[in-house]
Length: 201
Image (cartoon, rainbow, N blue to C red; front, side, top):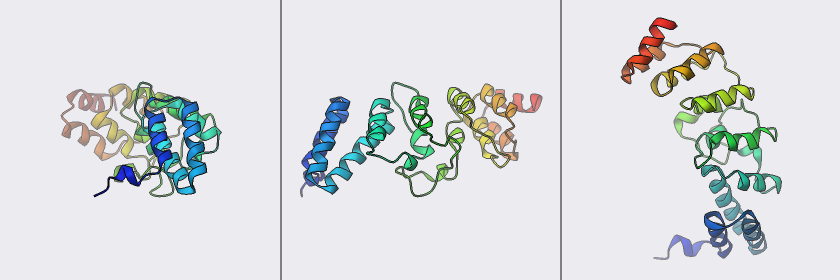
C-alpha cells in the first residue's frame, strides 16, 4: 500500500523541510515551487506552512504568509491563536494579527476558519479560550478585549483551571458570576479558590 507521503507533491516535501529546518527565504522558494507545480500543490503547501506557523507560534512565518497574501487573516479564528505553543507566548502570535486589524473580540465560528475547533471552543472569544493564562488575559484586556454579561462560562473556567489573580482581574472588568463558578472550584478540589469566592465575591 503506497504511503501518504508518496501521494503528496514534491514541493510539499520542500515546505516540510523549510518548516523544520529552513528560513523564511527557504519557505518562499518552496511555495513558489508549489505554485509552479499545480494549484493543488500550492494549496497543500500553504496549508502546511500555515499550520506550522500557528501551531508552533512561529511569528516570522505568520508575518510572511500574511504579508505575501498566501493566507487570509480573516480565516484565522481565536482557537488557532489559543492553541499555539512554542518558545514564545501566544500573545506574540496574537500581536501580529491585532496589529493588522484582527478583531480580538471575534467569536470562534464552527466553520469558515482554517482551524477546525473543538466543541468546547465554539462561540468563544480569545480571552475565554486563554483564561487559564493570566498573562494572556491581561494582554487581551489591554488590547481591547471586552467581557459581556453573557460570558457566564468565563469565571467558571477560571475557577476550574485559572489563578485567583486572574479571577480578580476579570471580576474588576465586570465578568459575571454564574452558579457554576463556585461549584467548579469545589468540584476541582481547589480550596483556595473556594475560599476566595466565598470571602471576597
